[in-house]
Length: 190
Length: 190
DNA sequence: TTGCTTATTAGACTTTAATCCATTAATTAA
DNA sequence: TTAATTAATGGATTAAAGTCTAATAAGCAA
Image 1: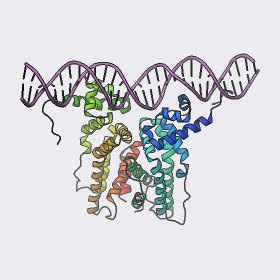
Image 2 (image 1 turned 45 degrees about the vertical axis):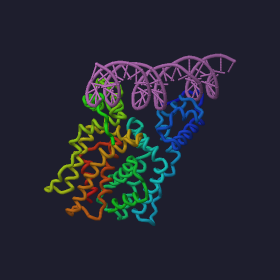
Image 3 (image 1 turned 30 degrees about the horizontal axis):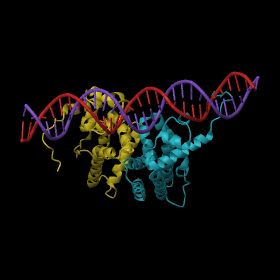
Image 4 (image 1 turned 60 degrees about the vertical axis):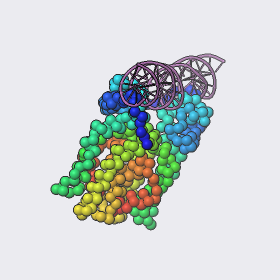
């Protein structure tokens, strides 16, 4: 399946790069809602249709741009056995919050887009949200194995509580700081 | 301050009623994003400017329409002393979820609007979100007083965890059902 | 070279939220 | 009755996302 007939003008990879760079730059500088498609293609020096050949909406483009630019923050840390899991969770949350303090406004805008577009919502959830949720779930299971957390508890539900808590804060424009990381951790580890 | 000079054409209260009714009806039937201002004023039989004389955006109008139509669900229940607090929380969550299963799609759209409009976000949070958050906080404090929950725990944080959990589920288009109410409750009451 | 195929470009077009304006309507005060 | 004031109306306008189209560009295969 999906065999392409040979030939045809090749896709210009530079156009993609320029579009992502322009989108990220403009969105971080002026805010998602204040950046028009027209401004992005103008800065990228590319035609409108070229953008829509690659991404179907502004949200898709910006998601990819933010995602690629912040791989660092989404990386699974190796759980350091020298520290207890309570500390690991708190430190991981602090790391997530650092990212959210850079791109939080953009991510809020993407969550908003996701509510209007089920396909984008699925993509956003799969690429951005779920991976971290699974990282925390695995950390909590690790804590159960090490006896730092009662094995009777539901790691998936606890992870959802943690995620819910900081997304809820973000969407309500509350600060995400070290104190919050500590407070959330305290309520999870009894 | 704020004294109005007498005279002037009086505001037509029926126009407000008709606009709210039209907005609620259309939004529930076709979905928030599929309902245009043009459709609302047409069904209400009112001029465009009349709508904007009362609400500054579609989101403000729909929030008020939904809010008025669902006072029932937002009412503070009297905590029945015959039941333990675990049961009360679970039942309260079930009640909230019943409402979210009617207007959840609309509320998701309003959350999206709130991300684009800080003033609306504040209004939405104050009118819709915070009251329930406080109800659950007070229930958890009640549980602490009755010794059903350790008094060392942070009731405000726990309430945020609970709220975060179901808003998170709602925004990710996951089901809000009795099982979720039970699972959330279980993780709060140890 | 000549087709064939796909990508890019520029710009017209559609839709919708929101603003703006001139005109008309409804009310109070003199 | 007249003037002042405020609301409602209908329609024009603006801004932006997204769609569409015709012309052109850049490759492959014969």
